[in-house]
Image (cartoon, rainbow, N blue to C red; front, side):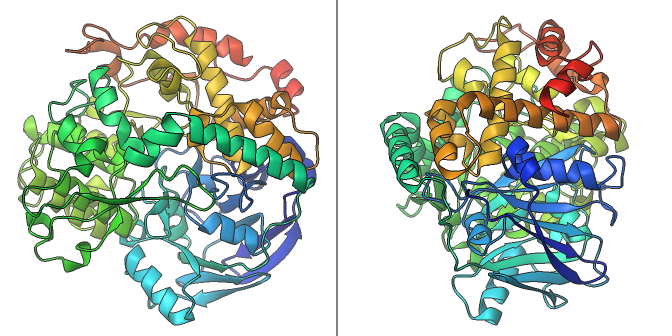
Length: 616
C-alpha cells in the first residue's frame, strides 16, 4: 500500500493546518494524483466558482508510485479550477518536490481560502507551519528559492514557488519547483498567488517503504527499466536530444505550427533544434547545451541544462543568466521560436530562462506573442500599444523585451498576460487566437496530424498534447503506425491514449515512459506497490473514470459540446506546404464517432449508463 494515507489540509484564511486520513474508497477508484485530487476537487468546490476567489481550492498531490524506486516515480500534480480556461486544471511536474512531499509522509496537501497576508508553507515530515512571506512577495522564483535555502540553512530543502507574473495576475502563470521544473499549464500558479501563498518548502526524511510486495515490486521495476533502456526513444533519443528530438521530425511532417499557425513548416527549425543545441557556437566555441538532467528516480534524463553566450545582446547586462540552468525543450522552443518566426537560439534560451525564473508557461506565452505579432502586422496593434516595441515576426529583440515585461507584469506584458483569447477579443480579432477552451495550442498542427485536432478539441483542460498524445502513433509509429492525414480510426485511438494518459498521470510516473511502456508494463509495478489487485484492464477503467469525471466538472462549470472545437484557421485555412498541403482539420468527421465511443450523448454528455458503469 504505497499511499501514506495522510492528507494535509491548510486553511489559509484561518491560518490553520490539519491532518486527515486519505479517502481510501476514492483511492481505489481513482488511484492517486490527477484522478484522486480531481475527485476531491469535484466534491469540495462549485465548478462555477471564481477560479481566483477564496472558494477555489488548490491541491498538490502525489501518486502511489511517487517517491518509490519506479523509474520516473517523482511526479506530482497541482489540481484546481483554471483561471485561464474555467475548466478543471491538472498540471503535472517532475523534479524532486513530489518525492519530498511523499517522503515527508503526505499523499496530498489541500489549500483552501485566502491568507490575509503573503505566507509560505514550511513542512518538515509531520510538522508544518505557515510562515510570513512579506520579504518574498515581489521576488522571482529563483530569488525565492535562494532566500528560503539560506533562511532555513538546508541545501536539501525542496521548494515550489510562484514568481512576479503570478502576483500580477498573469493568467497562465506556473508553479516552478527545483528552479526549472514546473506545473506549467492552465494558470495554477495564478491560483496559488491569488491565495497569497508564495511558496511550499518541504523536507522529508521518512522515505517510502510501505510497498505491498517489495520483491515483486523490484522485479517489475527492473523489467520496466530494461524496456526503457532498450527503446530508441527513451533509451537514446530523449537522453541525447531531450524532447527537442522532435523539432526536425515534426517540421518535416508538415505539422510545425509557424507564425501564429498560418504556416505548417519553419525554415529555421534546424537552427533551434535539439541537434543545434549540441553544436559549438561560432562566437565562443561552446555549445548551448551543457548536459542532460534527470528528475527524481528517472532513468531517461531528458532534461536540458543550457548556458548562454555571454556576448549575446539579450544578456549583456544580466550576468545572472551566464550560469547554466534549465534549457529549451521542444514545446518552449516551438512556442518561442517557430510560432513567432524566430530562429535565434540564444534569444529563445533567454526568454525560456525568464519563464523559468518568474513562473510563466512558455507555450501560452509564446503563442500569445505570436498572436500579438499578427495583430501588429495587420496594424491592429501599434507601437503605442506595445510600449514602443516593434513586434514583428522574426524579431528576437522584440521577443526578449516582451518576455521581460511579461515576467514583471508591466506595460504591454500585462496585456500578454491575459492570454491570446482575451487579448484577441480585446482588440476585436478573436479568430487570431489559436486556443481551445481558452488554452493555447501545443506544437502540433492538427491539419498535419489529424488525431491531435480531435485531442485538442476534446481535452478537458483546453488544447493540450499530454492529455492524448496520438503523435506517438501518427508520427513515431508507437505502438503501431497510423496515417497522420487520415481520420479513420482516430476516435478510437484518441479515446485510448486519453484514458491511458489519465492513468499514468494518476500513478506518479512520467508520461514519457509511454514511448516505451504500455499498461502491461505499468500494472505489475502498481499492483506490487498497492493493495487492490491492479491489472491493465482495471487501470484502463480508472483512466476512463478520471476522464469522465473531468468532463462532468466542465459540464457543471458551463461548458458544452460547442466548446469541443478548433479555431477557424484550423477548420477553414488549408495547410500551405508539406505533406498536409491543401488539408484542413476534419474534426467534424471524428467528433460524432468519438462521442459514441465515449458513451456520451450527441451533445457530449456522459449517458446514465456510462455514469453508472463507472460509478460516477
